[in-house]
Image (cartoon, rainbow, N blue to C red; front, top):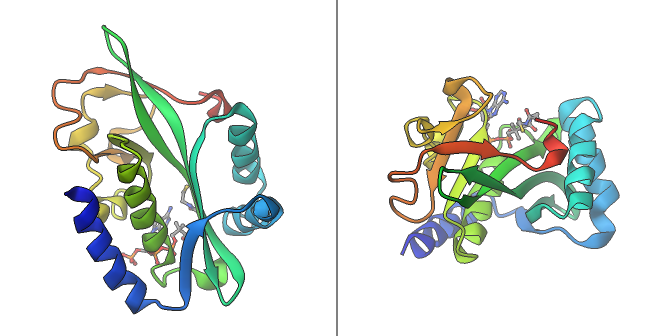
Length: 184
Ligand SMILES: CC(C)(COP(=O)(O)OP(=O)(O)OC[C@H]1O[C@@H](n2cnc3c(N)ncnc32)[C@H](O)[C@@H]1OP(=O)(O)O)[C@@H](O)C(=O)NCCC(=O)NCCS
């Protein structure tokens, strides 16, 4: 149900920005994705993080935003875990996300996130976790409250989670474990 509802919303969004195509990356685009990350962040760290996550085999979903044939945005989701007293629960890390400076603030980041959540939902993923801007991610359903029982090395105000399956985090207490590429 959640998947269908989000898909409806996505179709409306795409109509509003019909020059933007959000789709999975292709293999020949890896250098373009590198340069999108370098250009958005003004440094190489996040581009390197993307490559390291690929090398580690942690990547779940990698989407690009294309405008008139140019790749202008990228979002990456990778496998992480919530370590509880009983077991390891699979979750998904959203990071990094990048839109080139001359295309920012036009809703491309929003389209990347919504499509990413659609795809993850369809894949059966249950929880997505982000360390991000406290004013931005709540509009997609990410909440600090949902992440409050997860221990992490991050400030609570920027550490958020969304449940793709209702109540997926209900009663879950644990410590987040990121892929090694994050260096945590
Ligand atoms: C963050 C980013 C991907 C958003 O892409 P975008 O296409 O501009 O996003 P949208 O148009 O959907 O939304 C713009 C909103 O992003 C907000 N935003 C999100 N993350 C932000 C951040 N880290 N710093 C500042 N603003 C941020 C802006 O305030 C703006 O909010 P508003 O609509 O209330 O004014 C883009 O700005 C970017 O690449 N920034 C540099 C890299 C970065 O900081 N990435 C995020 C950390 S992984």
